Length: 90
Image 1 (cartoon, rainbow, N blue to C red):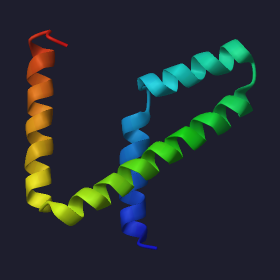
Image 2 (cartoon, one colour; image 1 turned 120 degrees about the vertical axis):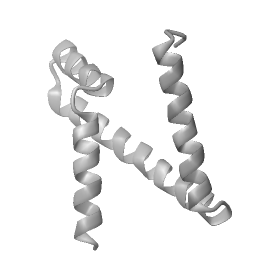
Image 3 (cartoon, rainbow, N blue to C red; image 1 turned 60 degrees about the vertical axis):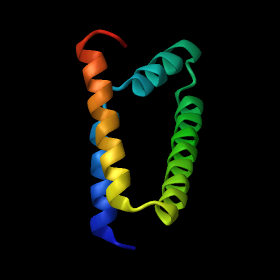
């Protein structure tokens, strides 16, 4: 296991997920159902599955497209979304 990649991935996702809509949904579900462990296990499994699908999709895409192109497309997508948010279009 590459601990540097592990730590970078963990730190990035931990900070990115703090206070996002998923965490708020989990708080609300745990409060509403009064079954925090059930909500925790279900949310954890969902995040693991979504992460797995993302990693597998990235591996597939990286086999067929150069990483440099993928970075540029992702950057352009973020710029477009940021511009649309700035203009209150989304």
